[in-house]
Image (tube, rainbow, N blue to C red; front, side, top):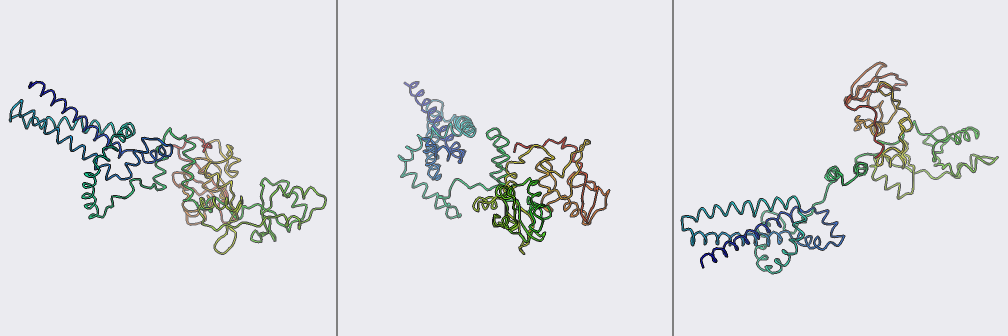
Length: 430
């Protein structure tokens, strides 16, 4: 009779340890669930995910029922262990039995199940949700009393139990999530996502075409000169202005609308002005993400950048903006940046007016972009003077040699990239 009683007690004790392991694993798994994947599964009508999401809406109740069950089975297991020690081994074994039980619970009911739950939370949490939900309903009065006491204590220290368990991600945190996605997201897609996040940190001055490089049509030119310019033009949209001054802008010409006019024998400047679309002006300092939406809202592809005084500083196109996300639309360096000429010795001849961001993006360089936008501006800002030819300097591990200075500006420079940057291997996939 005593053997049956002992085996029954041991069986009960093993069952309690198993239940303790279940509650421990369920607690860790529920708290370790990826909230954003959980939202996705809920939208996909995943039944277990929907149940787990409902439980996580009130983490105080979820933790309350889990701890209530865990403590109940642990206390009951301790009582049974003490009973077994007293009945079959004597009082001297009570302390030893308690130590053994503590070790068993620590290994088999705490460490092992919690580690498994932390590594595979969905495998544990989703099945556990079907057990915890009925238990919560069954023990709700007791859980309510426990939560009421605990929540009042939390309010004393300024914590609301109804605070959302799902925290919002900042752009920097989202960047980390994308970086750590690994093989889940193709590398080129990762780079595009990161570039989209960076749009808010970049303004239109960083990528605009400077005023002195804007190509347009001057109505004061002869009709023959205008026709020649239109025939040789590589752009689809051109500013139309007067008096050789871009500030005297009339509108934006679309080559598609101009070609039928220049095909006629009689071609007048008045006709040209009549088909020009009203110019679209963009204030300097506008973030790229805002300008992208403005282009979409205004149904525009070209904007003229103006300063606080209304003077035109440059030109921004939708193509330039999109290249900040997807990268250059060509794999030919000379076509991408016409003022960058690779040399056989691994150096590059770069025009002083070249945009630094364009060079960095195309050649995978890391020249500073926080200040000046062009190479000439970077050099003069660093030296705080206009350099003489043959001057050499080092900026961010890039050796720069001034080759030509014209009109108080660096015309041409030779750049030697760091040795660890290797050969030119631009990444055009993103």
